Length: 48
Image (cartoon, rainbow, N blue to C red; front, side, top):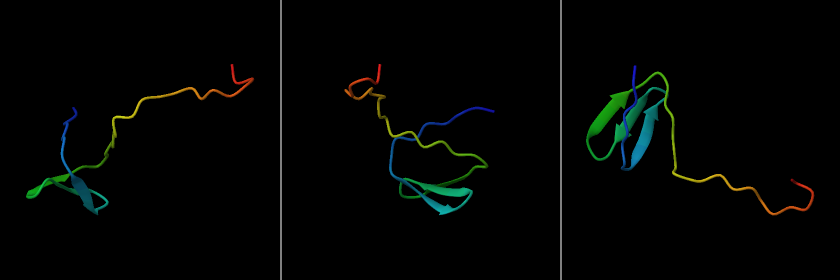
């Protein structure tokens, strides 16, 4: 078991079928979508 990283456009064709880029298709039981965001603690009084 491992992970593959694709840095391109992708779209689900079915629950287990993902089109990667223009021509590649992969099948996966589980998918993680990571958008590259970073966690931030908002500046709200009393939150700390």
